[in-house]
Image (cartoon, rainbow, N blue to C red; front, side):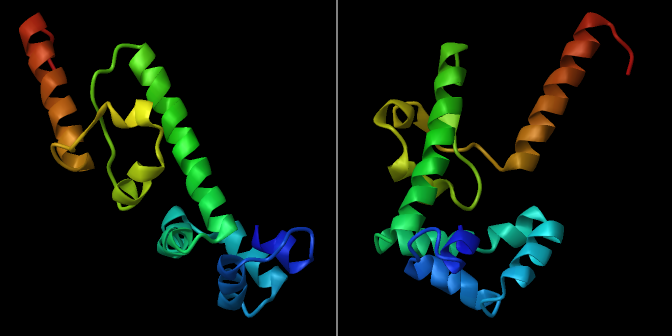
Length: 137
């Protein structure tokens, strides 16, 4: 969204101006960076989005609403498949919760651990099931 703001296709916002400042208002630098940036490098801008959404920056609010929409959509599908509890995890979880639909929030529970804990539980459950079924690893 910073590039369309740079060339006047969309209205700039405080957030977009801040992002442009990160790249010295050089659109080519943004494109070069985006071409090789890893998820964590994109993620470093998440706190800026959260901060500016709290200040009612239209672009930041739109980004938070889009993120919440995707979570709501996924949650609705999980619930339709029988899921009774949903835990949000990660650094943005607490910031996104208030943006979610009330229908999604009614299924939210606190995580019982981090991603590694979950992976270990799944591995242990599979191993236990294989042992019970007499399957050798």
